[in-house]
Length: 274
Image 1 (cartoon, rainbow, N blue to C red):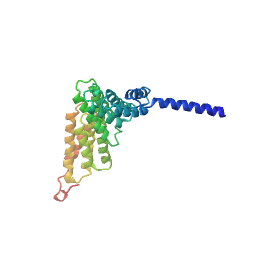
Image 2: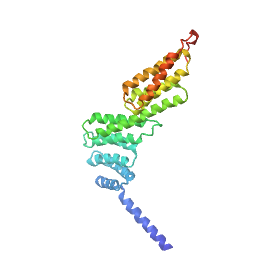
Image 3: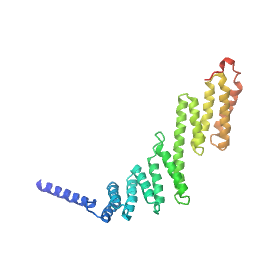
Image 4: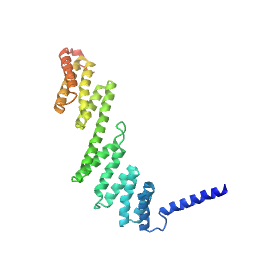
């Protein structure tokens, strides 16, 4: 038993000693420290590599080693999926070394860092909006980059997520019979994200919402709201003349027109809002 314990302790001692040799020690020169950091990075030990490169950025400030370490510090965070830190370090790299040929790569990966932080549509979309801003900035700064098409695709994907969030907010208000609030969010989806599938669907649902709103309104407000349904139908035809929802909106349009024609002339006492 004692021999087994000695073997185990010997192995642990040798393993620890080997691990310690990989880490930067007090007195290591900047080139040695950078070499250790790169070794950790190549072994995909990104957490230890990030710590090591952070040390080198301070040891080698003003040197080529410091510049390389700053870039690979950001790369280590990115590869280790620590995206908030990665974005910050890529930005620091660009700020410190704006003429470095890797600037384009750094700015794209900074945008990608925010992209990776973008949550599902139901949650707060601050990172989504930040990612869109960064991809748009990238495309403006590097219009000839081969990464521009990918950045554009990411923007479309993220905008579609924002559109869905707005659309689902409208649906929530429809389900709770708050039609005025629902139409505000339908309008937001249509006006801000017209290229998305959710804008098309919003127009369809908005026609139905105006009809339902009118059905549940006092007589004095019905004509106005049935008319809004018809106006939304006309907007739909302008934006999506070949839509798969064409037959659905035609039926809704006919319903709105028929109900509008049947609205009686309101009495003076019925002119208050509902």
